[in-house]
Length: 291
Length: 291
Image (tube, rainbow over all chains, first blue to last red; front, side, top):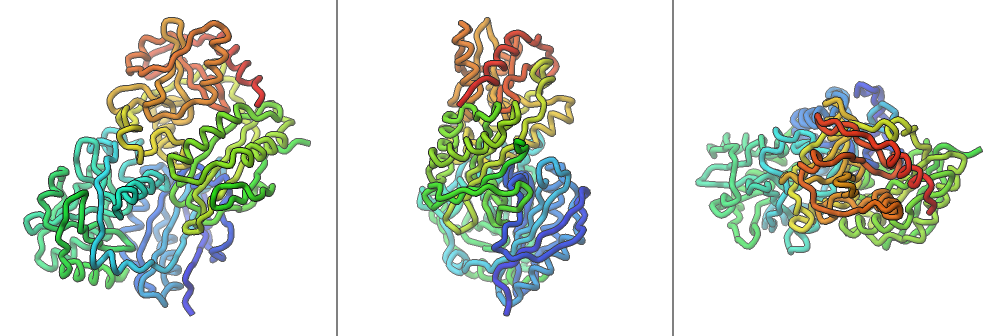
């Protein structure tokens, strides 16, 4: 029988190298109350989808984990060590069509000088309805200017940190407004990303996602979606998009690692057509990826 | 013999009421890897100073914890329950002149529907030099506009959340610039606060701290410092301060719960006189507070 929840704890040295790993009862307490993950949100993470036991886009996720870690002056990511953990967790979940593993690299227990790491795997919720019928999103001000990444790198815009309280609060604000999700807009009116997803718009037949110099995360699933699109003859582009692009788009998606491509049927008060054929084909591709 | 590190774990119900508490070996793992404190920085905290076993400004800290919790849609803070924990931890550290306790309220294990809470007490580092000779601070852009609190409450400006990765990154940026600490400035040039302290300037003989509607934390130690100043006949004020106020100030302090009042001897490239008498008197008052 395949597990439905899996937890692996990594023993890391001060340079971030994986000394050993151990599988642990997911119900067990494994973190110190002084771990900076828990007291400062001071670490980085990735969430990687798993299809029938195969982790997806692993190299892209590990590269991004390393990029985030560098932005936080964390030790280098031991890519080989983490890859082995991801594969192991994925293999444990091979009885499920869709699962995910979250990998977390924390700065560790305060003053201990060694990072902590763990990988948490679980079965995915059923995203059938969101993928087929779409979701309703609202735009919310992210407060930061579109040049934040170059102007103020200490604000960590574009790093996937454990400090996600704002991302979660934005989702609650969306719920208060009767919506499911959020599209963040910079303080100067530039489209950014969702709290846990990248934004893709279809503009004049082209799939366009916000440029990567805006202090946003480079999307792993979005990158694979673009690969699929190119293979289908659909042009793609990274571009700075003003908020008005939402009015010009004839379709839009929030793309992330577990829900994959969720079409937007409504953005603020504007209805959008859901292109079921393109969405279904894109999700079939994303679900079918292997490592 | 008095302990030097203390950990108390709270058992909270879904409404945030303290059902029970237990003292735990501080070296033990107490948190689940799925606790939202560790995976999302999704919770709130306070750090309370302890002098010879007496916790200081406890009501102000618990009030602020409740304010932060409300901003995050967390359950209400059980003030009586938390107060008892704070007093207990403080009492365990009564053999030390200066100690502190950090109290953490997390949204809890994902999907469990119950918050988690703990209190971590420890002996304070020696802040003698910083209090006497002062620290060097640099101004850093906080990226957010000064009206963020009203304009975009989902950005949680002014809530003391566990999502402190940016606060920690700003400190590292300061160190890179040869400084000890940071004064954050809004994107429109208004003075805010430090990453873990409030800013107080002396302007024409008056102690002035930034107005509280700027998306900053209401200072607990700063409020007590102002009480002391008023009792000494020194006028105090909360005011919106442009960055240029740093050039007009003849003294400045970063005020926080463990280091208390640390004078700034340098802000960016400007030297400031350290008023040793006023600083020493203020710190004597802050160190002498009881609950």
